[in-house]
Length: 196
Image (cartoon, rainbow, N blue to C red; front, side, top):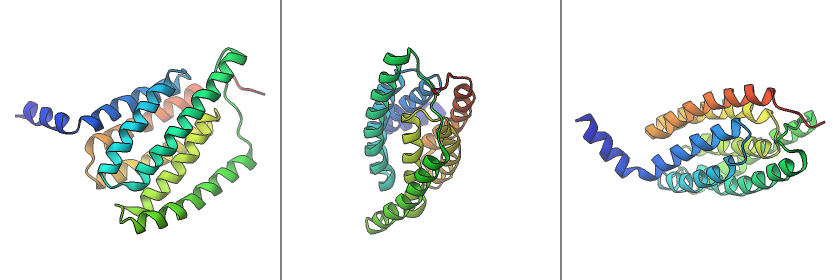
């Protein structure tokens, strides 16, 4: 009985299952500072673009488009660093740049919320805030700032709540696991070589 239900669920939600799997692998590779994280994450971005669009989480769907751009930039930026330094080094984040990025996250929340409300998106305010601050965390990740993991811990915690409300069970589990991976990434990146 449970096996039949599980098989039907997986078959009817195969895009979410594929996005789930590639996201988990991509983030794990990111915690290890492996360049392979970028093509895997790119696949996850595309898959979750479809999942979120179907769920009418329009800020999250739009976010995936930005993630695709940031993923391509991160892939290029990390590759450049590896060619020059032989490894992916962590880059310190200045207080000024952190404040600017967080201010942009707040501003982005208001802009995305206005758009989401007009488009009758599900959970427009929460979705807009999470999408906006996910962009900040993604930018910090692409720039190799350890602060990305702190922000992901907070953002992913709220995403668990959002996906529970949406009854997106597989994605809820994924984001709970991503919190654990963010903690792992924080630990591992603290041990990484730092660019002066």
